[in-house]
Length: 148
Length: 193
Image (cartoon, rainbow over all chains, first blue to last red; front, side):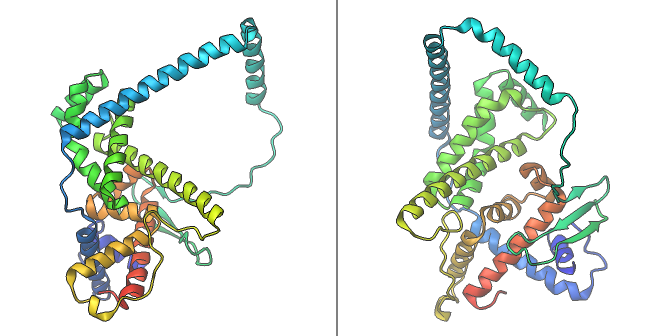
């Protein structure tokens, strides 16, 4: 819990005032790690030339649009050729509507015992469900953060 | 959203390609750098950045004015990255199955966790390289949240909005990402700090 608080202080997400001296070293360790990650992970190279980049975006967009349009037309034509009984469509639509109605009308349902656990946000603060996905043997900690 | 950006977004939603281009020019550098930090490969980062803007162009009509434009873009970039990662993982699993080799844990990751020789630890540049390698060993969602926090400088709330996560999940994931990174650095350097 203290380490997590130290992290939030280091990130400027919790007030630093009245900082427990025992936490100061942790806060500094998080800040040092952040500095290293920032320096290591920030790419030094400039992004590619924008004009060329955007020409590529437009070319891909147009290609995707044409492909979609061709696919739609081809599907429609294929459907007409392969299923000449197109007049059956209204019957199909009626059956689909009946199936939908049957699904939406409340009836006897098996109880759902599935359990989903996630953190959730409140008007003021958060309930943190803290799990280590890499290690299921560790305890799941549930705690409430009062600060917004 | 500042007035000029709001006007550009409204125009882009109406199909004004020049307005969309101006918006893209504002953010393509940040999107590219974020993807480069995740993929470590310039060509792939450019490819993914272009795909991000293609999807943005396709979806700009349905953009909700209430949310931030950059946040929306980041979310698209995140989805593009995740899609590519899954695609590569599936390909790797297929080829690993065929070859009978072990599946690698993360995009671009190396599995060598042997400590480096002491003589190599002293140079700052080499140390940063170790940090880069350690980050590449993290799971993609851990890499991503660290990049959003440390490289992009997003607040917890912005990360929550960008990734569609609860604030508590952001804190928890960030904490575990950093703890895991510390562990890897300790294994590689013998200590951290």
